[in-house]
Image 1 (cartoon, rainbow, N blue to C red):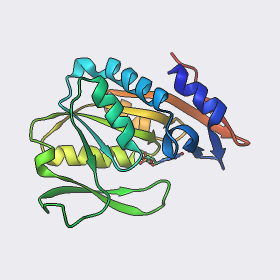
Image 2 (image 1 turned 90 degrees about the vertical axis):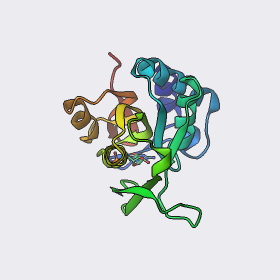
Image 3 (image 1 turned 30 degrees about the vertical axis):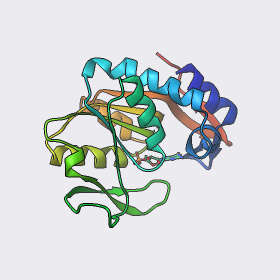
Length: 193
Ligand code: 5GP
């Protein structure tokens, strides 16, 4: 997606060999024009899959999931929580997720009633690296017998295995931009097909 590629090129920062920082427009400060254009791009890709809801994980995924869900005709967004709160019903499904950025193991959880059996689910997240977050979300769907009809990612890091593994498994995956490498702080993007 050209608009996202340009934002990454102009405002993204490469940290070390494997971290992409996009706090300027996606992860801390949000460029809302870009955000809603991303929502449209995912909607175009996944409309034919007829999702009933969009599933993501707090916190960075939420804005993107809302943009996609709005573009898909105002379907609901459900976000998995990373900690248990007193307001949770306790009737939840859970999955372990190792966080690439925080280097910690979390459990993500969703109240069963917000992920109905048989629902068609579009997963949206900001980054795809090793695939831990997406696999955790897929596990929640599996436990609820919900069908994952697609996975929409803003930025896939093509030098980590998550994306290739999902494609090989036949998952309908759409990454709006793919980073091939970080070289001296510069982010090298894959050419679009
Ligand atoms: P995965 O679970 O696929 O290994 O990593 C994806 C998750 O880790 C995303 O939800 C994202 O929050 C975080 N993440 C992974 N790599 C990066 C990165 O390079 N930059 C940022 N900002 N977040 C990342």
